[in-house]
Image (cartoon, rainbow, N blue to C red; front, top):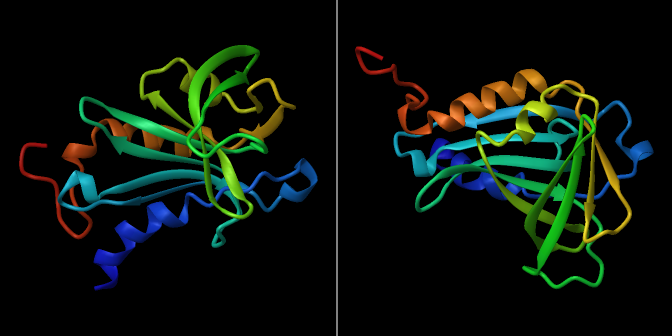
Length: 182
């Protein structure tokens, strides 16, 4: 019963994003990759978060998503979105490793204090190579004040996440083995 519940509950739990100040993040925040593989890829959860382990406090959540015609990374970033309507389109300027990326996203508000912007990024986007180098990601929503996201420690979990997401349809369900020949 609990096993069936986890994959459906976790995507909701990890969407809790809070805009944290750099001092509030401290050394407790870290990059964590969680995966719960089910037989049906649509029930599988692959998620990379920057947050405090074993809490719902996080600044970023990256989940593997299956769309109508593609598999992509849904990137939720905690950000100040005061005055923007839930679901409103937002321009997000991202800078990683000195390289600027501009993406269209949408504003989300899950409840009081849980807000930000959501982006859909291709798994082969050059953004991932820049992010994997570590350092700092700076992002701005609609030309507002920039926010920073530490990237140190992201390389290994990001590599695992992207590799699993690309192959989500072939991942063996937890408790099973891969089919012969794979």
